[in-house]
Picture 1 (cartoon, rainbow, N blue to C red):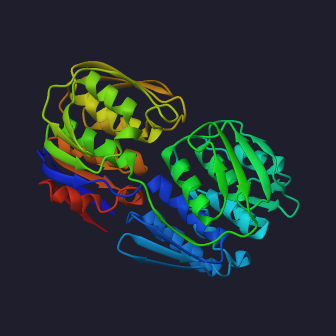
Picture 2: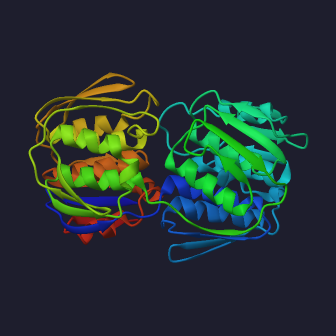
Picture 3: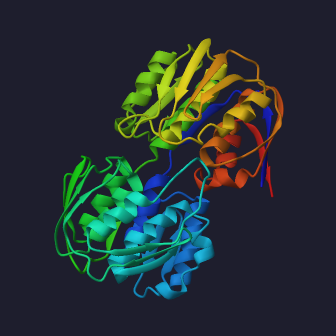
Length: 415
């Protein structure tokens, strides 16, 4: 898929934040833990969820969507026929380790794929399962885990890994007794998973902290749950409005999840007004800044990329630091092709000097967040920008092209 953008653009109107992409996948994983039906509301129409549906079909699991409601009925789970090729294409399929261990006490899974943003080892996941009594074999391509002797206990994670925390939660919810997870991640989508598991019959204390205590049950029940709003999409649209100097209202923003984000916006000089859960961004002259990606409640690594376009239109030298992944700056090379004055100091730091005039070019989409960032660059740039491999963007942003068209953007997509 390619996306064509004619810039520069001045956007106007309202855009609504959809359900969280990063919460959707663990919520869907939890549906495998019960034979009963689970109904999930406020689920975004993104291609990652379509991929999960295809994987679930290979397992014999019924999954259907009506609007933003996804219903899953995993009465039968045939893990022997899982579509391993699809698993290898989706990073979020790592959560099938915990889900299938919780449901079947064994799993054979291809190492998951997804965005190429640097080293993303699964050692923390496998080590955690071992601490609960699982026997793990990993040959670098396939992971085989025998969990028939798994038991409740204490898990100390090697790092604040979101998906490792979620995987342990999925298993612990099905283990009779009490499991304590230390060094747990605190992201809102981890809390959302905890809340769904509680509705399904687990007891969980300490959600939202670095120590989570789970009292599990061998049999979990069905439930209904409403997904949280996507803080990453909210931040993205706010930065898009600021970069294009547009008058734009972003609706249903999870304000409590973006406290440090708004502090940095204040330091940059982004002009905005908050009314209830809506944020209206006004055109403003922007100042240079320094921003660092940090685990929650810091600024998410998934949000640092759009700040690079802000740096291109701000006055002075801006520093962006992402200590989490060494491959998060691939979009910088593409911005340089468009005219950005940027220096990648090392795999984790980049300095961008602005303001500079960006010019439309033909560039690759790269990954979800980089691709979306280059959409902002295309809206800022003069002339036509063509983004190849733009299908990556739809993995995380539902109908981004259509939503921007309604705001006045000259943007189209084609297969």
